[in-house]
Length: 87
Image (cartoon, rainbow, N blue to C red; front, side, top):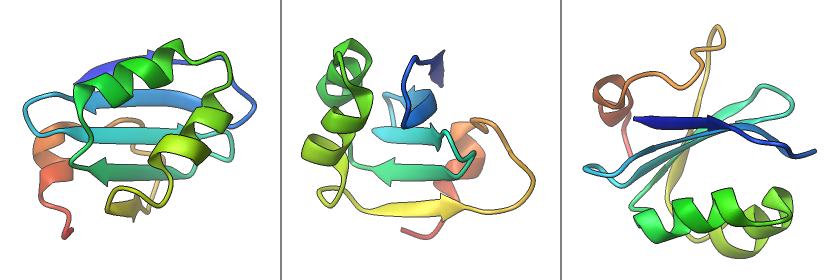
């Protein structure tokens, strides 16, 4: 999984597994979400966006199935573990 910390008031870190089209977002609140079926172009555009929060709200939020990951901050866990999450 490719992982990057980002400068954003909304997001703290972004991870992506290209083989599974799995986007993992850690928000500033430390809430962690997995988004399924996200093309690599969306991940790359998110990294390049001047406002990560605006890009998330306009392009990702509400457009891809997701699950929140609960528990002790599993900061950007492996895609193998993430893939076991029920979509």
